[in-house]
Length: 274
Figure 1 (cartoon, rainbow, N blue to C red):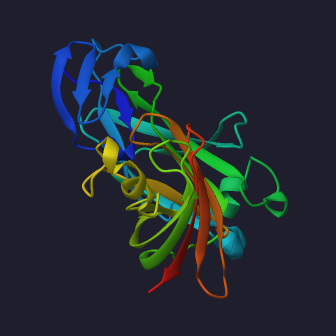
Figure 2: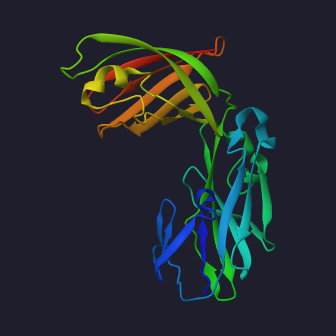
Figure 3: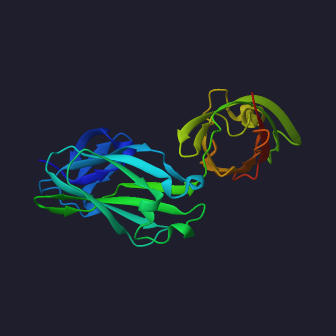
């Protein structure tokens, strides 16, 4: 039996097992086909979107900026895939139909805006979302997959930094202002996003070793750079939501950002490139 469904790029080849006819257990997600109005009893094809290139539209490149991805099928029964696009949450517009798979898709910003609006009206932080429908001999099926491309700026923050972090905890264990130094690593995830290996700049270990925080505690988070403004959100080790916000100094490359946790703990991290 084949199935019809579109998987996002991060789910390619991650099927682990079937729990029943309507549910697939994936590596990091359970997919219920009926949630997407897919009749699993009908024949079809399994389709995936992968190999995203660029990840965002570089505002400085204007209409020549481009985003690419690959559309492929895993069942062999797909007759075509429709690619839709929408701007800032607006109604989807058909961009193109792919009849031969796999297909390498490259869409410039000028092409993306055709049917969505004027290229001259594009501004920073606009968001173009691509969605998909798959057609088989049995019918056309909607998709839960998407590719999101923001209009942003190029970013090159990956690397090693020396950080100086000053903050105050609201817990009685550690009153007063504390300053620590630590080496910080930013790992490029593409599209202006980075993994930071310790979003607290070492403060959580300094404050909360008494509560079980160790050097092995996972303090990673995703830091996003949008035209030299950095931000992020996460769940800190004790379960509350925390936010990150700051900026990049274009002259020195120094990144400065602050964090605020659900306990109202605060800290400011100054990261200097090594």
